[in-house]
Length: 128
Image 1 (cartoon, rainbow, N blue to C red):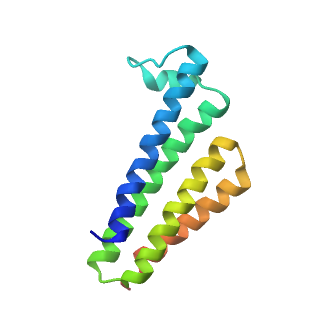
Image 2: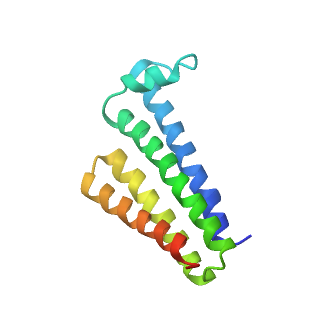
């Protein structure tokens, strides 16, 4: 399997890990996670817990762009070296994004978002 495909696997894990952190914050704020109505409970979170839920949503949204970018690049015959670098940078930027979201460091979060978005665009345009 190629590095970009491994990165795609790693990218799918980021929102899942953020979901676990959201569960932790639900337990901290409410005493337990409500498995019957988790979205309503998530909407009531404040502080870091609320940011964890928002980071998870953003991670799913970013994955929805990154996944087809990796596939288009691969199927379209994009340069494997460039695809590897862009995919690894994307993963790094998204990890920074999640950390900055949780830590409430908005400028760093925005920069990480822009870097990852640029990587996805580069992957899409690679075969052009």
